[in-house]
Length: 151
Image (cartoon, rainbow, N blue to C red; front, side, top):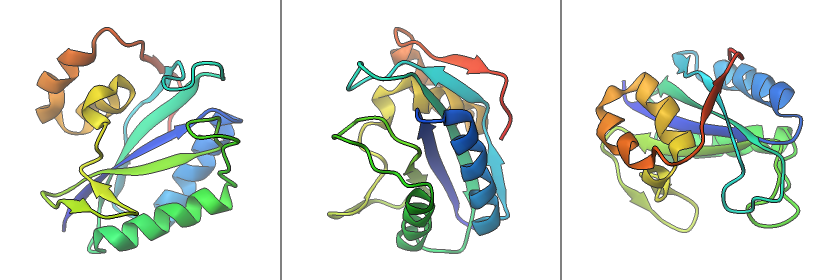
């Protein structure tokens, strides 16, 4: 079965939204593993609350587009509606990687175009796939603190 990695983030009622999101992901994708959860400062728009971030690894026969639609459905259920681009959000779900598949259209880009610049993506990703450790070394200047929350 193909392996897909999903980035998960929240900075509005983050603990509850991360837990609710994890339940929904388990319902949609029974073959799922979660990284630890990390607390990070907002990066692109710093005047907002810190984010909680994690990565999920799923095994699925669904094509990337179907995974994307499942993630968007979860975001809709959790009322993702940032007040401005890169603003606070209840949940943010991104496909980071899907096997060795490359997708580049108006809705979906795989691999995620900025994942290698973000410690809050790479740190949890390395827990699930240590082949990214060398790339992680390039983001050591960014704050990323593991917290005691299990998904």
